[in-house]
Structure formats: C-alpha cells, structure tokens
Length: 148
Image 1 (cartoon, rainbow, N blue to C red):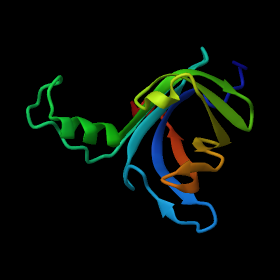
Image 2: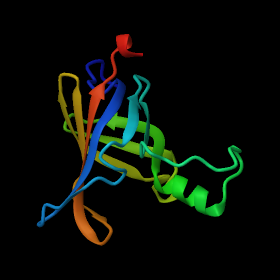
Image 3: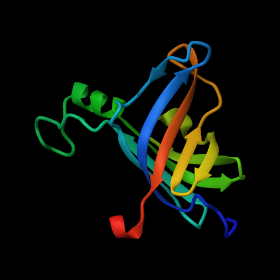
Image 4: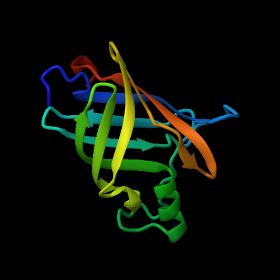
C-alpha cells in the first residue's frame, strides 16, 4: 500500500442509499439508520459489516439456535465481507475472500472513491438490483482514536 493511502483506518457508516438510473428513485436497503463499519488496514486487507439498526433477536437467545425464519431474516438484514484491497486513486478494488453473500467469494468489487477530510464516499457503477439498474452510495465518517 502506498504510504499516502487515505483509506487506511476505520470508518463509521453515515448513510447507504441506492439510486435508480433514469428514475432517480432512492431506497435505503437496510433502512435510513443502518449501522456499520469499514476498515482498511495498511497491510492491504479490508473488512466491512453493515446491518439494520433494528435487527430482531432470536427468541431462544441461543447462538446456534434460531428458527429457519429467524436465521433467514438475520441474513437479509446484514452485509459483511472481507479480503485484500487495492486503492487505485479514484477507485478501490475489494478482492472478496469471505462474504455472507456466497456469490461474492472470489469476486472483485470495485468502488468509486471520494475522500474529503474525514468523509469517505464509496459508490458503485450501475448494477442490477431487484431488476432495476441502480448505483449504490455509502457515506462514511472516519473514526478518531478519541471516539473509541
């Protein structure tokens, strides 16, 4: 990783919205108050976890428990993956090694990058989501040591 890599550090999610191409329709896949963190290490590895803020707990309270419906709902309200990354200035490539969504394992996820001070915006090029071409826009804020 170049020593001037502005991505290195921990970032807290401020918002995630998907925008329809053409119609401009805005949706919030995990709600308007989704919570999450993305971490970029100087070693070239990254990890991201995002969830709905109102996720239901399993009734049994058992880590290995939960009904099929509870487990399905838990998966629908959470996104997580990790792997190597390469910062290329205006883009970052995530080389997915582990993911809640199995189809991403072994894939490359490209994100457009905008950094301004303690704000990071990661966006996608148009992708098919629910039968509609959309772009995803995630806004992050750098976590400072004093906030931990």
